[in-house]
Image 1: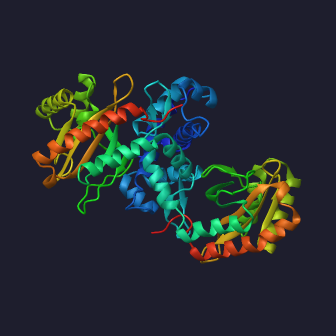
Image 2: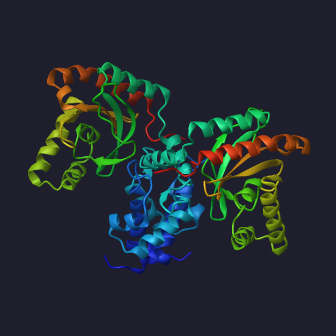
Image 3: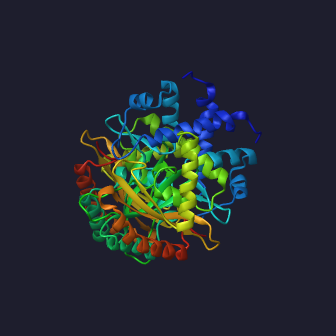
Length: 256
Length: 256
């Protein structure tokens, strides 16, 4: 098959646009009209219509009886794939549960890095009435929050700079960010207060593979009011212990 | 934003190619090398590399520590969406379970139509040692199997012809297929033996929405040796009853 220009700039752009259309569906937007997709993306109607029809062809979107678009049954296949690849082994589930319990009921979770973002791949919801809950699989910036610092331990200085630059907060922030990552590496953990969301704090520690490379971060998150210096000092030993246990399990991203 | 030519032929093609790359990952191929993707698609290396890098950018693929590609954590978001949109209400789960039990332990499942294909969106696995299990969300041809006939009840004659033509088996098959759909409509159920897979039989009945349109099919599948005329006669009343119950629940494809 001859190579065409379509998978260079234009082709890639179409793929990204199609994935961005799918990303407009979430728990607050379980169905959408074509008009909403056009308004949300700013794309021409004809483009949206073509992309929607392509996604429908593969079952990733579905036109319901009432004419609204919704995630299609073809996504169930991806759900299965994601589940198989990212399901935690029972020991890791138990480890997250214990971490949450031993922290007095804060939410515990595991993040992985994806470019300049981090994604939560597993979570044990805290038992406190005021608890911090994130969405599994949603991208959050790597430059905000303790787990971002932990995920960048051992990363090349250019990579750290690239992440900080993505924040668009100027060179002072970039230097400060590099310093925080350095400190996380030195201590083996990181703490953050209100970096991504006001009133939300977190502690995180790196999870490594058998070669000692950081492949994930494990953390606790909750309201800043409960993440006092005293309580954080209590969290740290259980957190670091959990990170060590998870590193030994060596399961991140699926095997075989 | 100006309309470009990219979302016409070329853009659509790139989107389909990207989705086809993802479809190469399944329970037997939980990870792949770039070489395998090139060989499986027949696409030029540069095209595959660009598409993989685009999919990695959105977290749908992930390069593991050992260099192999695997489904990325970004898929967890789609998994959540698919789960929310397609999760059966408890009454429907119970309905499938009962159908399986009352048929003596055959597998029961719900299919929806997607173009010329059908997708299984839910399944209750039979309890027999020799049982028939399909993959959730995987596309199967609509022109083979009882659930395909049931799904086409009420469809326009051109649509039925289109599905039969997709089989590529000639005009005789097309006439025979249309006759089977007609018979399914008349009886309110369909039966098939070895149409998609040798030695596998199925019975299916249509599930309708509140306007009476067919939106899904519910069926039983198992080895032909157990789908004798006598046993099929026993299956039919419980199957038709299950289809009626599911129609009343009116849940297909998510609400709100």
